[in-house]
Length: 301
Length: 314
Image (cartoon, rainbow over all chains, first blue to last red; front, side, top):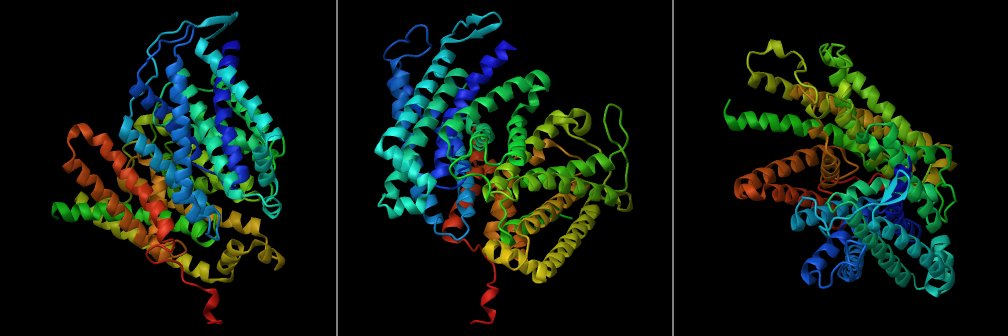
């Protein structure tokens, strides 16, 4: 039981990081980006590539399995993932925005997700990979609950990012502009907001958070080209559960989805775990389509 | 029959089966603007439903009803319609994207059931040795395949004609009205949510029909025939052919399936064995590029939708 709680919070915090980026893009750019989860995979593999180039120039910092090199690699990967997100926006989403049917852009994101996933498969191969082969010993936190140091790090970094993002959205000019655009795009534009700048930063923030989520996933589970594909549903479930455009809601939604997945395995065979986010999604859509904390965009038309 | 002709018959049976799926999707996306991201799921429900209903009684397996093939296919279609109803009722009154997300989810869930619910679906092995309709009447597999090609072609033509009649009827014009301007449609007393639900369920029922026909032809079901990539392939078929046009859906299905088959053949011939899995990735990249490039550069597809409104104003 306790172990399921720990595992659920851990995978939930990774889902939460991915879901924050997705909820921001869904709120501000107003479309369901099926390729967002692929940014998680891309970020994770870019960090692996940078790590491969630089090598572990400094040893791991005990008790973690990684050190400065991985943190450096994550920062570079965040830049590379942001560039990919901006390139996709410019090459694919920008021309599709002119379509009368706004679902065309959702459709395009589907094609993009396929392309990104397959390019990763082509470059890095399909086998599971790891940032480090260092073996870690789980620390007993409570009786019946063991946690790896890397997992504790994951929880800590997620908490820091969420708090930081909260202050960014509440206090900074850019953060306020993003919220304004999410709440009322016309009003924001009338008030002289340069929406292109805001949109650009939305991609950068979403892609950077996706990178962190990907690296943490690679650190605590493993790297596979299907990471993103398997995250699509949990991310959307978390976003809709928390209310579209609501950052805090996405975090809570992510934790709920993560916990539900890990507790479901206690009841149903593990093979059905991936269906849990779908059940949550259906329940939310039937019972409370605006999410627990009604988002800025809202689910109902 | 020579090897090539036999292969061509096989190819056309599969392509025409997919053309029925594509026409179902065309009704949803092309005419009504509904995004179904779980096409493969409804195709799989039709296939598995038919397989369970038509299959002979077997130990350790649920089902084995041994029903006649047409009854089993209708059963599969009803199951696909029910699944569509569950997803449709949850999402069709909400933002359009929610249907895309929910259909994506149901397709994943169906794949999990197909893989894990061994007592019903046979798990990873699938269900084998299913009866093929009227197989005893034909002397050779070659002759039977010819018959089955004609059978699938007749059904595809029937679906085509029925859809053409439907979209030209007042009901069909209503679909485009809902797609183009929901508020206007509502102000004319139409109920957009109800129309969307009808279209979505009907389209998914057609996908279920195609699933049943597929099982009747190959004589088994296996989860490997229902991978998520099939959804992308069907989408590519629709938009390459031209969404909003049923003939385009058929042309796209045959064309894209031909492209897929030939690229697969080319890769297996040209690439060394060690790189075959990468070859698979290249094939999928081609599908992805086909979708994205068509959307950007030729959104009308090869044939495309005929403009209906401007007939009198021109």
